[in-house]
Length: 624
Image (cartoon, rainbow, N blue to C red; front, top):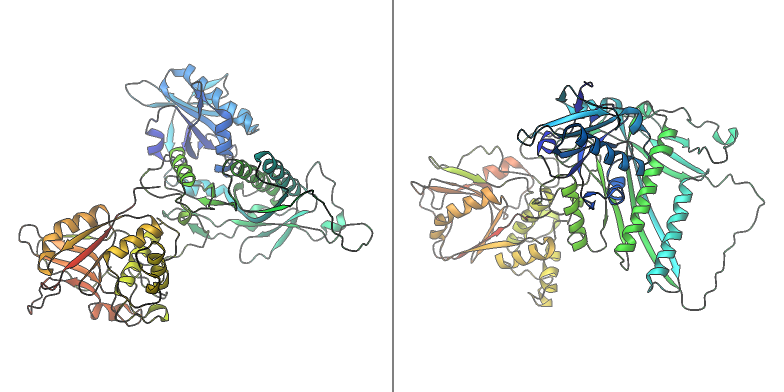
């Protein structure tokens, strides 16, 4: 029996018994360890399409991690395990990964169809041995980053393409291929250096990039440079936190630069090259944003990490972008690489999007759908949108409840000193976070007419903070422009102080966010308590803030407390008519955020029986 296997991956993903093939991700520097799992998506004649799989995984996984094995979710014992080893080796050869044969493969298959238990094997294809034990690490992230670190390199490229015409795909392809080839060649130039930024106490270091097959730089050229600098020397010890609470080390930042001032040769005046063409020339600009993320051993030399990890990662991204540009031709392409760490993963992954037409464009949505399937993520929530991308900002310890010391308060209903007053009721409130928008913010005077605008801004902030969108919260002007653009309002509406209601809010949410809404019509304020059961269901299933408008002032509804036996109820109201500063105690004391009974102890009606009300219920998108 072979030694035990350490599993740092998500247990549910491994034990979900997906049909087909799953790739096991690890590192030859951490033998007999599975770090994460990827589902195989492309098949050809019943077997994994290795070429298509490698094209996807090459840019998805950070350099430094590799495919160390495979899982076949079928019964068969040792013979099935050998088949899993064979397909894992095929993918390894495409990646040119020699470590697979030396450190051994990790493969698994079902022991029996009835028990659905995975039996693991370790070794080479010819000499696989059953593993006597597998165990999940209690703190997988800490185990991984104890010996490894992150390298981060961001590079913005503006690439001009000149041609007589781009009408022919062949002309476009030849120009594109030539431009990408020049960039790739530049990455392996002897004149390439890198600025290394690590801890706050470490000054920037200039590191030469030496290639074995390139001309060795002279000693004078390298004088004072940190050739023996290791990754460990640059690590800050700080941590960043993903959107889902996972802590990772702050990366070492790598900034490529080109050394040109020391070129030998005769002095000459600047010159320009003249390339005459027979017809009118066309210029097309490619905007490419590369972000490489690499996993390196802490003892690895920085210079070696750059040549073996960072530069290959940038090269792979450029070649992947070339393929995308050939498949998704657009007039002004804008390709960006983003870094994510979705639930179930302890390491980042990279995704390339063409954001020329926004995130709602079909090809971008379909791209995310395939990524969700690859990473075994749910298909009903956004986890790989631009808003979910990692920023690698230091972790901030923020107490629960409203966050002060910022432009706007967040979640002002948390820790309120007063309750709803409903006996035996069931409380249903907004899920997630929102910002409190109210009158006179941003030095903008909307007192008396902007309450529905402010309620809409609070709703959009919820979508933004839940990472359904990267769109900024719209200003009053933007809201009015949107309603004019879609034809709901006349051009004279822009710049006015006219009220808007639930219908207009639904139009704006649909246009700016692609979010649908339900609208409840209530003929009288006295009928609103009858809607508590429906409102409670909304907060329990959708969880979005609700706008209450109609023939009177607009409010934002954050929840209800309802006793379905006695009919007693209360509404958690966030009032946009507040005109003061961002002071939580003042807001609570003034009742600007608080529970409101339909009729208070003094017999005063909060919802007037003589007025009608429209309630806007934004729907949580069932999307990716």
